[in-house]
Amino acid sequence: MATLPIGPRPPTPAQLLEGIALPSGWVLVERLKRAPGSSGSNFGTGYKAQRTVGGKTEHAFVKAMDLARAFGASDPFAEMFKLTAESEFERRALEHCRRLSRLIQLISWEYINQDPAGNPLNQVLCLIMEIGEGDIRKQLTRTGALPTSAILHVLEDTALGMAQLHRSGIAHQDVKPSNVISMTDMSNAAKNLFKVADLGRIVRKGMAGPYDTYPWPGDGNYQPPERWYGFVPPQWPDAREASDAYMLGSLACFLFCGVPMQPLLVREIPAAMLPGTWAGGYNDSLIQVLRSKQSGILAKTIAPTINERVRDGVIAIIKELVEPDPLKRGDKRARAQTGAPGLDRFQPRFKQLRLHAAIDEKIKSP
Image (cartoon, rainbow, N blue to C red):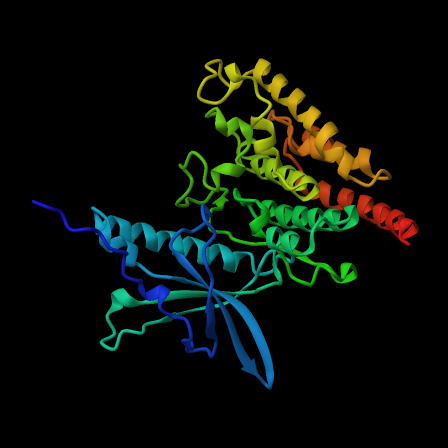
């Protein structure tokens, strides 16, 4: 007997809110398309929103979440419990981070139900958050290559945001260009402000969460090399904070040459040592090879794109951030003093280099 073709899935309640006004007055003016392969809480639908208060128009980003995905699962009750736990975990994390200056802030949250009969299964949770001018990937597509001082400003603010999370006992685990938001028009360098977005895949120290047991919580394309080989350090600073550090270093590579460190490194690993082939564990011989290959990439691919006045200082920082040994990764003094990567040490280092680069760029400008 012939089987019927499977058509497109009907839209969920969270996907049908374009043009709808929330009880608080926010109007969801545009539904945002999800980037292919993106990670984070994978059952949310994003919207641009606006409202008028006192004659002034305000703008926001709204993440709408429902339970519709659970209905098609083999165990819908278990899936519904899972989705509820994930959404609650993210909302509480956003509330916990409300005072962190380099994190996208939660403005408010509320529920909406468009079903005339008020079916509780059609309830949608809306997280209303700050919105900027766009993520770094989109900004670079629009503006083209950035001067060294502007790149260091991105890294300075991102390092501060990561340090704020770490001080709060949170590891982001999904640091990548699309999760760093330019809050201002990047053509005005004097007012640049960047914030870290998307707490959808975080892990919290001492607090159980939905992603604790995942081999890697975030986007697999940006995980540090030890995870390629299945090695997870037993201690929090080495497993979580050091992972964030590597992704910050990889972000620096992307900003300078347009490609993150991970794909650059994979191209250079000898065939016998590639993940899935190498059977020797994440040992010293492998780490030495990875370190050597990364040093070559930094020297040949990254360094030539950096302002000469600050080149050595920037390369030194990136080397510390992408150190392949997670137990040694990070600021060397912080490692010696606290045993942690010390991302709070990188923000002032980036700032100092940014100021030097800006002076040099101004002198050389026509």
